[in-house]
View 1 (cartoon, rainbow, N blue to C red):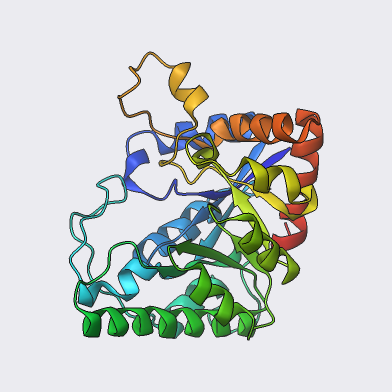
View 2: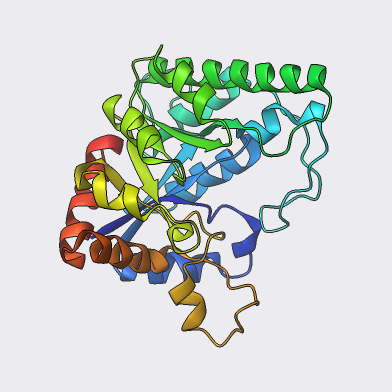
Length: 290
């Protein structure tokens, strides 16, 4: 078995063939955790997970681009579902209802909600003025901390998104005793070591074919790595090459393409595909309790 620890089959990219995609993924013995980016997509992730007895799970949370949207205008990818990112507040009680599924009174958490995410900091699209930039960063930090505390309250791990914000993120995480994964890791080796020293896993996906983090993959222990796709984004280059599309054409990513990520990690570490698949699956089961 393989676990794709970060997918977005709850996005509109799969609206026409969702059942088929999930079906062939499960048939290939690949489980998946579908991750929310705001309340709407978190709710969709939970609803999708609840349709299946086994193999499909969810994470709920508010992505930082929504938390800080009041300070800049961002156009999001239509694969997610909307043209312009709108600011959204983290409404704890609404997310708590999702976490408890059919037991909103708090009697027992849903076994289908296995993490809070994706949450974090994203300074890529940022305001130009110094004053707005500081307000933008502080708003993201505030919402991030609220969700870290929420995860602690529910005793759930976190799935963390970080782009151009590792220094601030590490400072915050050092004040919190919490477990989780740094999704789509693209930092340097020093940052990787700081995260793993705090007990975090590093999530590796198709970006490793485009962004040179070979040294990180070689040196970080396998027991600190998770594999993911971030589908429909970050399609591994071998999957594009094996399709009928041209090199510049868009090829939608799917959980089944996780095998290319596993093989690249195996090649860099000079170990077998099966060893990477087995260990990263065990890592995922340990972290998410599935």
